[in-house]
Image (cartoon, rainbow, N blue to C red; front, side, top):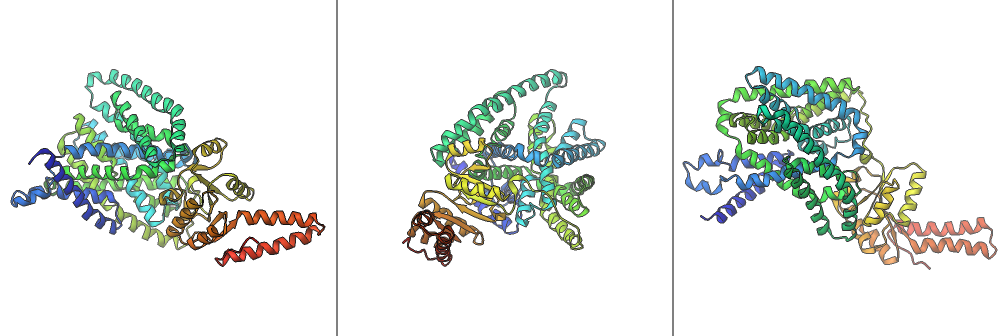
Amino acid sequence: MSFATHEIREAVVFLGAAGLIVPIINRMRVSPALGFLAVGLIVGPFGLGRLAETIPWVELFVIEDKRAVRFAAEFGVIFLLFMIGLELSLERLRAMWRIAFLVGGAQVLLSAAGIAAIAFYSGYLLDVAIVLGSAFAMSSTAIIMHLLTEAGRLGAPAGQTSFGVLLFQDLAVVPILFMVSAFGLDANAVGPAIALALGKAILVIIVILGVGRLIARPLFGIVAGARSRELFLATVLLTIIGAAASADAADFSPALGAFLAGLLLADTEYRPRIAVDIEPFKGLLLGVFFVAVGLSIEFAELIADWDKILAWAFGVMALKAVCVYALVRLAGQAPCVAFETAALLAPIGEFSFVVSELSLSLGVIYEDTAQFALIVASLTMAMAPLMALSARWLVSRFAARGEPETFALFPDQISDHVIVVGYGRVGREIGALLDNQEIAHVAIDLDARRVAGLRAQGFSIYHGDARQYEILSRLGVEQAAALVVTMDDAKTTLQTVKAAHRDWPDLPIFARVRDEAHANALLKAGAKSVILEAREAALQLGETVLVGVGLPESVARDLVAERRLITQASSASGKALPIG
């Protein structure tokens, strides 16, 4: 079998297994990460590969050559770090600094120190113990966010507290990777090497963040102005890969360069659109990463050391849970909030896989230790959904006794707000009226130049296409009070209303229209009410004319108000009246 044919067969095996196993995992309401992990376990050399020793034809369904998988998996880590950086906007850090830096920082330090101490006294070398402690102290952002979103708990106190701690854990990724890299150096060269590495790190940060800040926003503004989704996506990919290559050229992990690129774009108006466009790539490549991890897990070791693995899995989760519970209580949260947060954050996260792989490649840990770390982390991740469900059930019983649940949401996770699609002349007038009544709102527009200008003036506006489900979802449409569509383009307006009504049928949608046909089409598409621009202008002009020909102002106002009520009733019934 030729190399190319061999690679194609393994790609077919991967896609076929993923197509069968991942949907089953999703139906169980479990994170797709565990589905891809199961794929790797099953089709790997330690899964079906062992069965192929007695049944030769089974070899057709085994992935043995892990080179191509690992290459794609590296890109999965790069995209994961980019998304982490993209979510770490200064706005979020300012809103959650107390939870993120105080609770999150203490959790990482205490958990890592406690786990490292246990590992050291269990016989591991100090540097290996520190690596295990740092890896096991982290929680799974992917799984926790999936569980909270599915349960509608992201806005709850436990959800927000968990997210705050995860923010700091994401920030801790950089120093942990740097520390692991330092452990891989020769002992006599550690001091000079660290000094040189710090100098290079500062240079890389200046180049990526400093130079990038000067050119990123103008570049994305030009690209977004072209209104080509393909060109915009290509620019995002170029930014990620370029930053990763820059870090690699300075002998740093490419993933750290991608993290800095995400951090660079986090506070721009393009963040929601970038996140939506890059999500499929990140999801698929990160899936390949989990498959690669699954391929490396050996069942024989799991069976041979089951007592040690179970003891470590439950011991690590217990230690982390106690730390989290105590810290959240010290932060002033209620006992039920601390309990649920502890249950969510206790399992080990996918970042432990990254640390294990890097440590193994640098010779910091040996293969058996890497296997042990992978199995322990995988076991706790598999238990995460059950722990979250059990904790929520117990918390609901305490909450039913009157324990309050209040928490300030992030600025970009507000509720009962209005989303204004199109922020031209009409959109800004609506925004001004909402501001006057202190009603929160967020705007989205396709005109990159307009978005950049208004954002520079302090407006809460983002660049993106409201016809995309993911874009509106990231603007909090599930908690929105209304959607207002004010765009000039009739076709785009109709498509936006149709898409929003299809995905959120209970969302009140108001739209601006230019003619009768467009009005009827929007009402049929799901708009609650439409405002015919020509008719409103005619009514206002008519009132002026009536006053000008001698009618008292109050009479003219009442006549126009009566006519306006008739047209509004017509809109509510789904029938648009002729302007005349």
